[in-house]
Image (cartoon, helix red, strand yellow):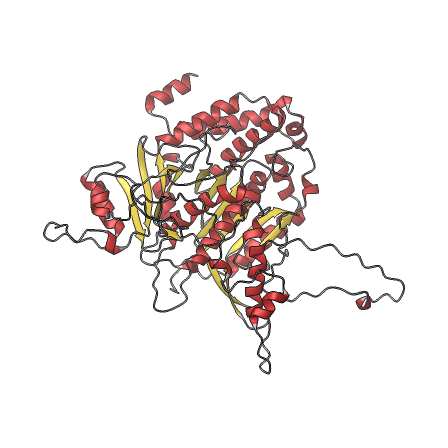
Length: 580
């Protein structure tokens, strides 16, 4: 691994944020290169750290703090299993009391087939080997009740879409014991509304209040401090947070702490709204919508740049149409499936600052995307990229564009673009220019980014401020990434002609693209947000009143949203707004 990586700490705050994060860490581990004969353009040292267990075993774990509610871990122990894998059941014989002892055992959480197979693979690493015995791993497999198979878990095909209940049900990498912090739901009991398919939903101020508790704040900030102290050259933080519930308020407390203690560092915040929300009452809907508006207002002011992530086309309309990719099949009501798309965006977009050859400092990314007081940017994803099995990029770009679809509430990135950063991955040098194509003298393309940048400059496509990079590594979508791809794709993610006799198989990797964009479409998003927020009457929602939101506080939120929107207005629009 390269030794020049300036580290980033990742914070995942909320249940759906952890669904996305789990897919993302799985994707990163799938791209690890273990032998000298293979190459990679990705430097994993930006987000992972080395360690060693008490058994002197080397580890490589995410530089991560994950925050969730108690009960959302499933079978995963709160301190993980990497540094304490051997757990034995307690016995009444171990009690120091000599009288009658009653031992009450909680039944262990049931594990799906994928987790059982991972447990067997781990046993080969953790279990001490007896040099005097030849242990047959097939026998171990049978003893542990797993399915008979010679394939490792990463190569088997599972259907986890119906068995996954929580994000740890498909987590592949091991976590450091200090990577998890669980909040007690009882601390949020100032009010309660029911959201179908999720736990009770609490508002922004309930989360902010919980963070201010001394034990909670100390527990979270101590873990952040330990992560920061383990870094040699920390450049900043990336925060993935739910914004539709109390976790938005918790994130406000976390970001305020980062601002106070790490003001010289940079923060990128991804504010996430799940597409599956389906509140059953008007008041429940109002709590969610109010919390989203508060989160946008507060978190954007504390972040270097704030990127909304929402597969629906409106940030407050919970039933708005969902963004659809031409060659993906997604059930938006299934968290395991929908979160995989946003994880593909995170894994690809983040290559801007974690590639081996020319990673951009996060500070530079923030500067490019936030000039003029514009603190909110949009995201896009092309999954797959769109190349056909017989295509070469040089010819393809003349008649096509990557299918860059919005992952930020339907923002149209083509509207008044100001600046952008794009990543293309998985387009190999052999697919840049056809052997039959004769290039002008002196012209030679060595990367997809160089070729595509040249095409955009020649066509004078806006914006003028653009950063474009590429890596050779495809997006590795092996197990436990879900099977969401069309049958019209080859196993390496290329489009197959409709008249082809190609036999469909599961996609194992795919070229794709992603981007971060600044432009007029963010103003449209904020206009929608402000317009919907102004129609909410918080005085008619008892839970919001119980949590401490009054009419004056809500007016302050609306005023901040207006200020955000004004940064995207032209002069005549600003004058009209001032008259209002």
